[in-house]
Length: 573
Image (tube, rainbow, N blue to C red):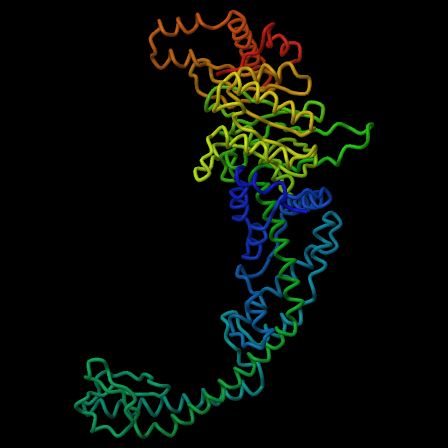
């Protein structure tokens, strides 16, 4: 089953933009249609198969392999027209031939490759189209012209036509020289009008030339005359050409009939080649993103089964990592969750990367369930049956819903549809209402989802929510931070540590009078001040360790508990 619980979240997470990037790596129209129809699936066997197809394709192209796929255009309309008895033009027949040849080459290339079992099996189902390739190739040139040797009769008729044309040219050239001496010729050239050879004669000299007028110039100064001496040979030439045209049409019709008779095999081959185009596009996209195959876990077994885990190591948002080579400027995130601690709450300053981190988790999960590799060093996902998201301000003006009411309505919908196998993403928990009530409500919502057994990643501005998460054994805090010197966002995600506000620091840096800053500081409780100081110390320690070890991002349980303090945990407001 595809889509289902993934559809609405896909719009919020911009899965369509991932598909737009992926589409750029497809080589054919039908391949791009396959990309457009790509959807996440909750069928874990289907997901595993899709992932393996991507991995095999990546192995194939990394080894220098290349498939032909045939013409970029979709030739299915041509096939259906031929099936209904329609006549295909020469260039259309050659497009069918080019596809038939490419399909045969791709089948031969992939069949019996033991290291690519899925691709080999898929390609081996491409029907034998060699007879069509040979028949059209023997009659149609790459330019779409019917060649002389398409039939013995056509070869003879074209020889007769060329002979008649040569004789006719001789007659016309003799007449041109003769009329030039009489100064009746407007221009000394031989041309054609209505399929007849003609001379350009001055209008006022028309009656000095015996012949048939076939046309008059726009200015009226020139008439196009076929000399009487050329009429008989002109007739022979035209008759030869008409006979040639009839034979050409017969050849085209015979080939079109053959295409119609082979329609079923051609359409099957088109579908298989489009699937191969999709698989290779996924592989090329994987390579551009420096992506890896994620592990998709099966459902956990009975009580003795393993914990379901969601783990990301140095993961990057695909739209920021950019198949365009921007990955070096994107800060990766790492996190680890399991079915015993499946709720992760991210806090931190505005524009620090909270929502980007949340969207990264959701979008990578969607990509994994669609069979795409993801931009991460390592990744593991439980098999989700759906992803549900409340991100941004989705209020309905027509329904007169406030921002808060809109969020609650969205959460109700998620609660009705989500299961213990779902991933839930909630941005800005507990906001747009009274801070104390909002924090209490958000904390209760998190506890409800935790009891359901869902995996949840959320963000918030509320200190009280971070405090509730810190005190719950089934939940974890995480934070994004600012550079202490520049106050620019670092976009680094630290799991186990709630975020700091930086509100007073930013206000002071922006020029708010110091007496106001001092007055605000005096209003902060000693417990909050102590906790903020400890968070500052822990973050500095993490920066030091991370700089020395080239990493960081996880705080130990003991230090995390200390950060919670006696009376609560710091977040930011």
